[in-house]
Structures are given as structure tokens and as C-alpha cells.
Image 1: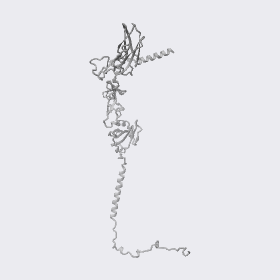
Image 2 (image 1 turned 90 degrees about the horizontal axis):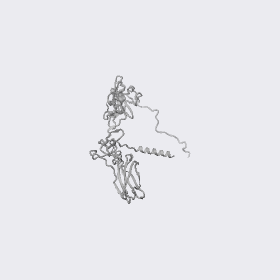
Image 3 (image 1 turned 90 degrees about the vertical axis):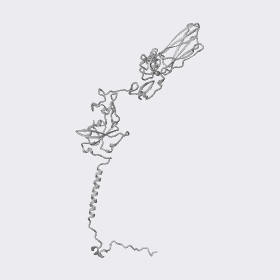
Image 4 (image 1 turned 60 degrees about the horizontal axis):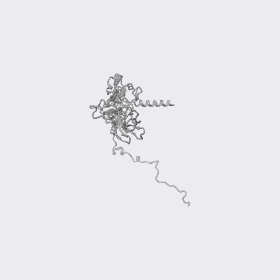
Length: 435
């Protein structure tokens, strides 16, 4: 069982050692203020300075823009036996510091013991030397926090204590050492900083770029894929860069124009192909005169009857919704308009070699209606004209003094109506006289 616990302890110790290892051999290549100060260096906040971290301050290096190193105020308190009994000092990682503690002792070689406690790792190197003369002794502590002392989560104020005891003395001395493990500027972060071209956060003069961007000022896009030997060109369609609708970007990808007619339909992942190019790839669909979805296209392509009132439609950015296109099919040059909505492409033929295709619908009303109304109006006009001519050419009426009126006799004007009944009637009451 003891062997098992020893193995576990050894494994844990090894993991701690490897996890906290910090390589400070190339301190001039460090690009983080926190890592620089953990290696005991000085940091430059100037983003244009090539070497950002130096062990020593040079006169001509980063003038006026070095990061201030966090410190604690040094202090010392004397006790009844130790001088000092309590002290606070600041020390840098990878740097040595010594502190002398004086006390009275009747022994020429007193037994001195110490214990080290820390808010970080145990990577603190401590040695002591004691010298006595005429009953007065001095124990000098040489301390040096190693570059692995600070963890990656270390703050601006980390500490380790050295507690000193002398045999047969009840009083103890406590020496407290402050170690800065982070820069004060690390807590000041400017989001979407102009210095970083709005593509990252600025802290301690360093840009932390957003995903997809790199460089000192986040000026370089991260290219995840390349097009090949001929970037930004679709050899199957044409040799024109980005189909003439864009430019080749730094990642060999097309950056489409946004200020051209129909630019809202440019396909970024298809070499900025416009809606006409994509629709012309399915030219077999133009053989079918029947409206509806085409079965011979690799994307949803739907034919509609021509409606002239739709051609003036605008979107919320005042752009034309319908784009004029043309193609040649079986020697016939024709024109059509196309638009996209909900991942579907719609088109209407405006000019074709087939006259049936050129039948138009205006405002959604059938064109035969005004023709029928015109014919009815013509027929009504003809009928009215004929009626007027008949009425005008009718024979005139006989005058009242005409002999035909004078020869009519009175007997010819009287007679008896067999259906006539007089306006009065009579009846007899059968109960009359019985009361």
C-alpha cells in the first residue's frame, strides 16, 4: 500500500512540475505582458516596438511606455528578540533578494529553522547563513522565486512567507515577500479596438484578434482553404476573375461587389456568379413552355407567366428585384427576367422566338377582356345605327281629317261585353220572420 501511495505522490509531483514549467530562455520573443513579468522581465506597451520584453531597462528602449511593475511598500517591525520581527519586501521572479535578521544569542552556532508558505507554487529557492560575534548573531536569508513560481492564473500580488525560529526562543520572525505574477494593464481591455482594426481586443499594447484574423493589428485574415493553381477563377464557366463581379481576396477567395445591378444575388462561394449565369446553366428548362418548377435544374428554378407589373418591384434597399438576363438556345436569342426568394429562383420570359411566349399579362388582368368589350361596343353601335335608320324611314301616321276616320260608323263602336256583371246583387235571408 505504501508503494502505491508513493507512486501516486510521485505522479502528482511530476504533473505539477511539467504543468508549471515556463521557458524564459528567449525572453525577447515573449508577446505577453503577464508572461514577461513572470520571467522577471520588463514590458513595453508600444505595439510598434519589435522587442516587447527585456530583462533590463535600456536607455534607448521603449522610452516612456514601459509597464509599471506592481510592488508592495517595504516595511519592517522590530520585536523583543528579532530585528526585524516582521518585514515586507517585493522581489521579482528569477531575481535574488537577501534579508538580514539580527538577534542576541549566547550560542556561537544557534539552531535556526525556517518554513516557507506560498500563495502560488513551491518553486522558491531559500538559503540561510548565520554568523555570531560577542553574543550577537545575524541570519541572512537569500530568497529567489523561480520563473515557475507564478501560475498562469497568478495575479499582480502573490506572496510567499519565510517563518524563522531559533531553538529555545518563543518568538518567531516572519518575512513576507511580494511577487508580481501579472501586469496591471492586463485587467484593462479595450474591445473592438481601432488599433486592432476593430477585429480584436487591445490590452497592454497587444491585440488579441477575433477568429479569422491574425497579425500585430489583426490585419491579416486567416485562410483556411485555397482554390488551387488558378484562384478565384471558374474554368468551367470563364477565365474572368470572380466572374467579373468581384475581386480576388487575400485568401484566394472572391470578394463580391455590392454596388452593381443584381449584386444581392452574387454567389460568394460560386466565384460571384450572378443570377443570370446560374440560371443559364439550366438552359434545358427553357424548352418547357409550361409554368412551374423545372425538373432538369440542380437548384429550385420556377417559371412564371410574364406579368409586366412585377418588373418594377424594389426591395428594402431600393434595388431592382427582377434582373434582366439573356441567353441563346438552339440558335434563338431570347430574354427573360429572374429573381430569388427563399432560396428559390423565379424567371419570366420577356422576348422569345416563340410568339406564344410573348403573350403578356398586364396588372394581372387577361388581355382578351378589353377585346371582348370592344367587340360588344362595336355591335351595339351598329345595332343603334340600324334602328335609327329604320325609325327614320317608317311610313307617316294618318291625319285626323283623313276620310278613313270619317267613314267609321257608330255601330262599329258599340257592343256588349258578355263577361260584364252589374255592380249590385241581392239575396234572401232564410231566418227572416221566424223570431
